[in-house]
Length: 352
Image (cartoon, rainbow, N blue to C red; front, side, top):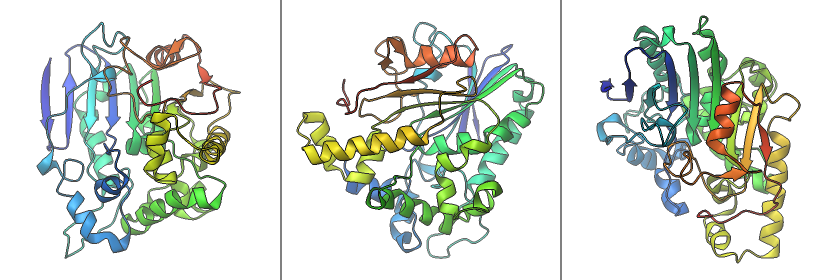
């Protein structure tokens, strides 16, 4: 097994003779401090934020010039005992650097910051190169995305499948990337504002499905719930109903501490329950788990696929006595079509 660096922006692990591929769109790693998140995190893209956006471009999630080696863990591990179902697959890890979930497509380059917003083109070129390098011969394939990569894993799911007409099994996996548009306008405002900034600055409207943008504002089409009904390819959603990026962006950084310490007030718990209800109402219904599988836990965490503990037999998150890695593998290989939701109405601490 060997590693190839392609254009400095993604890594391919390839094992000769294998005809199974996994493409993964990287998530953005955020700290627990909300002010830091807003400074260097994915969604700080409003037109007036040029200075902070420029600062983020000089980090490993903003430019290939600053990227460090990416260890392959969890679902990417080549260790059979740690990753029994996918250890010998060809794996592609697409590094994240565009700031807009691979949706941006604008010619304009800000003369002050020199920033380019062309994530949609990055995805297209990466896929074309991988097809030429052997992906087109795959028998099984997965397009997966974590956090900021979760939305494009849905957005490009059908296109990915259509690029592999001879592949017998093509499915998509969304890990902690399904952020919802809360009904309460106060709760819904943070992400709507974030998405409006992305749609405006990055010109994402041309990338988003016309079936959605013809009916609502482009920023609303960056919510997965508003595009999922038109996707034909099977998708699996693995996420906490209390994703700790979703809760902190919506309620502020203090919510992390009260959940960890079990000190949330009755009012805070009521709001968390309201958010959970909206989230469960937004995700696909369970009437066709073959097409839409879900694994929804209540641990206050964010992302699992790259975690050696959460996405392996070591210490996985479990719902109804079924671990997330096993649930997804059974669903992917058509052994059992999983639709699992933890019924608990309040979050468990992140280290549960």
